[in-house]
Length: 429
Image (cartoon, rainbow, N blue to C red; front, top):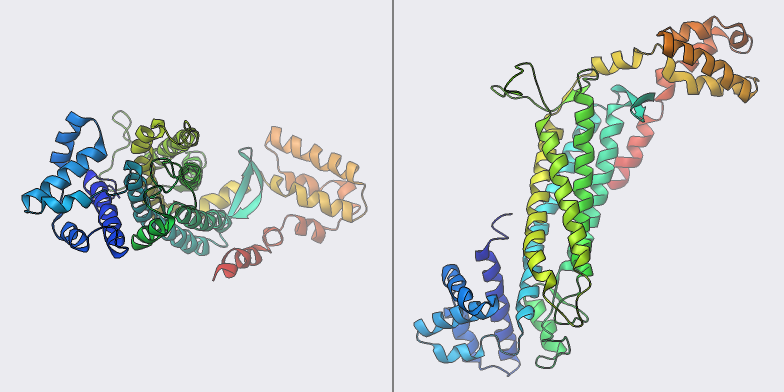
């Protein structure tokens, strides 16, 4: 990913736009065919020379075209360089070539999302029926399975694949419409032909630049993707807490967690994912600010994009790889999960008990009061909620021992796991 956003690859894209433009214009009889051929065969650039010229002229595209013209002169074909950059303005080259970089980046990012989906799916089925307590507000709620948690993350990743595909398609456009977008020097047919030669579509309309709503949407999509990666990492961080210890990131041989405390196994990779995801989201805000430019263009967006496009693509690629590694190698402790469910001695079945009492004939308000009364006492006194329910005459008046046992049944709570998995996975196969 870093190579895609290197100066070398950027200038290679610029040169390819210049050459494609010359060749299409030659086919249309607007540029000598021999000049287009010579440009293709001999046009070169040297990054160091471009940067040297730029320090003097203070304009990157002029520095680039000057360096390429020098290469043509050195090859003995200075005359052909008259047709380099013919009919183009700087952003015809910059924006169109940038679309090529984004397209290259998107291929890697989509592959990264796909690998994450595969890792999540594999582990979801591995822990499909591994019972875990679900938590709301950080407090025990009702039973789930760890596989359901992983399936939920898979579902998000699957949407991200489709979102990123769409956002990448929106960015796969070129523009060669000139300094204010009016196609004064190259007509729309030429613009479309040059774009197609580069594997792009021509933007239907542009100013001097491609409208930056496309770029904002693209980086926002990366922000949403990395937000899910943070969500996964944050959950592992919570589950790795000493008093929970239901799952943890790998701790490798020879790794050390603290300079002062040899016992520490800190979720450092998860914390890194959570931290760097913030940078991508912040870049999305900067991309939103780039949409509004003065009239047909100013360059307030340009300096920003030199940072946020490369950084967001590189960071998202990195975080996808880190999160995929985390999911694939995460240590899971089913016994601890079951022990944590049993910590509250049946409290987590209070909702099912409430429904069963109401269904058996007890008014709901009364049923809620009875169940909550026992629940609060069990909570505060660390008592046995299920035992208290079994010995309550008001409960036993409407529910048999067998019915009470059904109220506290894990199988009953989790009877629809297979159907949920079918909805998540079968619809996508």
